[in-house]
Image (cartoon, rainbow, N blue to C red; front, top):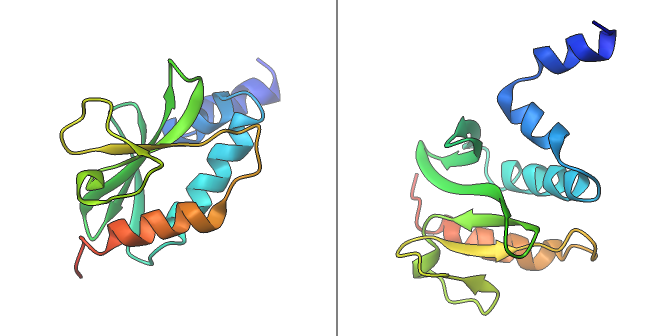
Length: 125
């Protein structure tokens, strides 16, 4: 086994998820990961339901996933139904709304942050 093979075996499921994505999606997901984790000092990351999940004050806040139909990564916002933003899609979901992110375009960090900050209002300390 090569050194690289050993390194892959040692990756956590979270890190392996990000490492397995092709570019430019990998870079996009890493950017989103950092953006979400920097949103609040109480934000934590976990591997749940075979995807990166983010918790705020111990409650499910959002997750990162790849949309099969649109072939783009997205942020699933748990309290998305309580938000009104034209970029959020319901797609038949009762609670969660998703924000598609095109990895081939420049990411609008301001818009993404404002949506996430609005969702943060529903997670009191």
